[in-house]
Each structure stands twice: as structure tokens, then as C-alpha cells.
Amino acid sequence: MSKQVANILYYVGILVAAPFVLLIGASIMRIASEGFEAKYVSSTFLGIVGAVFSYSVGYLLRHLLTQENR
Image (cartoon, rainbow, N blue to C red; front, side):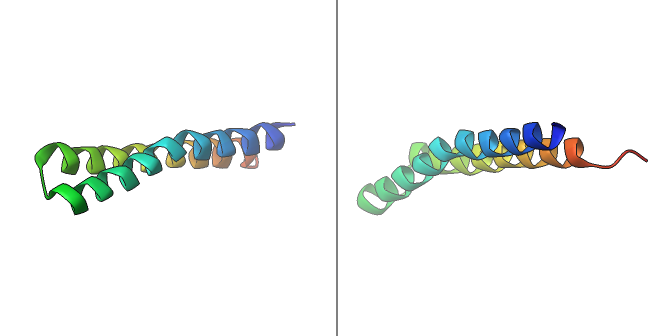
């Protein structure tokens, strides 16, 4: 049961990271079309941090819930 919950939390982490990936893409497109402005670079950085954090939380929860009791 905990393995199923762990996998669900992992995929929820991936789903939460998806909007951040879209933010990264949109920011890069704006940088390419309008140049390096601080707000676009900040949005790209926020997207990267948000995506990495969301994915890592899902991965960590999956790891902790599927770990064997020692």
C-alpha cells in the first residue's frame, strides 16, 4: 500500500513541476524575442528552482515511503 502511495506522490511531484517547465519555456522565448531583461531572467530562474524543488520532493517522498525498515 505504501508503495502505491509513494508512486502517486512521485507523479504528483512531476505534475506540480509541469507549470514551472512551461514558465521556463515561456521565459526563454521572451528572452529570445525581447532580450535579456531582469524580469525574464528572474522568471526563468524561478521556473528552474520550482521545477527542481517539486520533482525532488516527489522523489524524496517516494524514496522514504519505499525504504525497507531497518
